[in-house]
Image 1 (cartoon, helix red, strand yellow):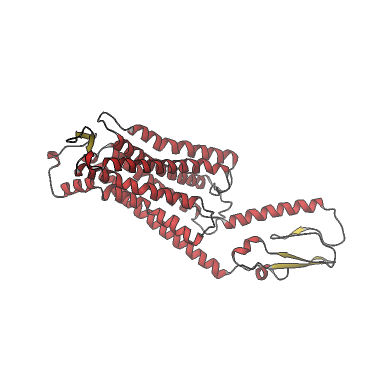
Image 2 (cartoon, rainbow, N blue to C red; image 1 turned 90 degrees about the horizontal axis):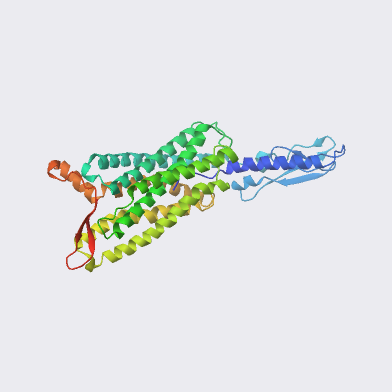
Length: 406
């Protein structure tokens, strides 16, 4: 799960052209000069080899034009006594780029941008409302809801990074995105990577804390909340800082957003893949613990309902976000691009909305507390807050079970 990152075929084309030009000029220098015939030359698109007078040379269009036609054309030039003739047929005819196709692509990308901008905007509004609810209602103050608020903050940060990146990279039509390089644009790319890493680190924190709650069998056992806070923010800062340092010192090109072939990209991708793997392991472990604790001998139906209510949101998000990341970050950039972009960017932009709905607006305790406030119950007659887990002994068994958790 990250900010919009699309393929850059036009940048690949420009890079390939620069490489071909360099190789062409080097090859021309190695060939001895001769006044007879035509020398090797670069015309901006193709490298024409040395040819004798009267020789007719045919070259295929650059590979880039295969994106627009399944049958690549070819260009001819004649070596005359006056030198190379003009290309025939002309490049626009031999290697056409359909203008209507470019217009359709522009319209398509504009539509995708509208979709993910709308999704992130809805997510931010929903997440802010959820944050206000969890912070304002004192009876909801407890470590588990504190973790929820951290997760909400990471999705707000992610949306902000997307807006910043769009404003930096796409604020004008005349920007050369392949060579555009400013401190602000690099900062926006670094911010988007940091936000993506915090997303996964706090989803992992949700799973770790839930596992700790479910696995604990003693009221004296406390889940390491502050260690989770330190790891949830500290590791993204560490790895993003390392990535920024490597890019700045060793690969300071363009806007740092062409990462697919860079070895330093794994400084960001590696920890995320590891967190996804650990989350799936915790996912299996949580299910195992739930199956054991939901057995009739382990407690009442009310207790079992508490366990299930505690776990269902996290059990949904772990595979949902993990599968989403694995699918869309290990496929080649050009694999099913027409379907991939709306799914990756469009659906991904609504993840924050889904998190807010599951962890706040569908949360039974949140709804109960809002209902109490809405119906005019005096909050002073209720306990001010619940900052720890309460335990009880199930009748007829020697096992301590969880009966109430925030």
